[in-house]
Length: 328
Image (tube, rainbow, N blue to C red; front, side):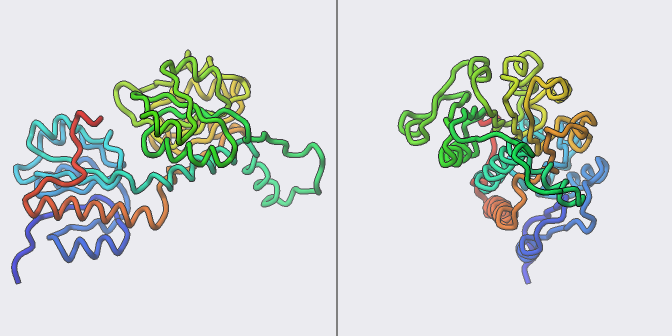
């Protein structure tokens, strides 16, 4: 039997079907322990492999890329976001980077609506009451939340996920507003019945709910800083399923604790698993452990895209989902 063409190292446990197919196609080293690799383990992998398959939990910075072995020619990321990879440095070293765009769109948009409803309708409070055995019966003024129909939803980042959120929001009777690096084409904007704001500040002052759907880049780090958070109405709610670094988490916690914002639903955090303790203690905050893309279907599709990218590269072609710095 001919030897398998590429040495591939996978940094985390992937769905069994994905790992099995990789084993059939490549000389792959799988991860038995489903924990993030240490920096030393990542360095060893990058010095040994032709292809590295990392995830969002792996920081592939300039220092690691600079020490990568001469064999490493592709970083095939398992996930759409690549802010944990120094794409510019990889490019200067002749290392391609690919990702898995599109497959998490619908799942993440579903989670936006889930968090929006959980915060505005106080679902976690009701759940805690029932699970704790404290419910004494229905009351006219108990657990009063807010209606989302007719409210203004501001979408920060109108890419695939932002547009999927807009479609769902329209079905709930919400008015869609958005701020984006580039305005949508007129036909796309009309289909979503969306109002464009060139000024993020002006949009923030007017919306009832803000959904953060932009990537983390140097330009979006703390885009929602203390000054901008102060522009929002005290009755407003923030939902973030994108990247935690877009929001100044300390400033957000202060606004929520002071009652200057009505609530927040967060699936991502500025410092990864080190969640601001003030956010944990607030009853008007719903926190999830980065579950936005966590569906069986989505994970399998992500794995399929990784395999296609690696196989295409192995066949001597550019991966279909190659990432270049100009895209970021």
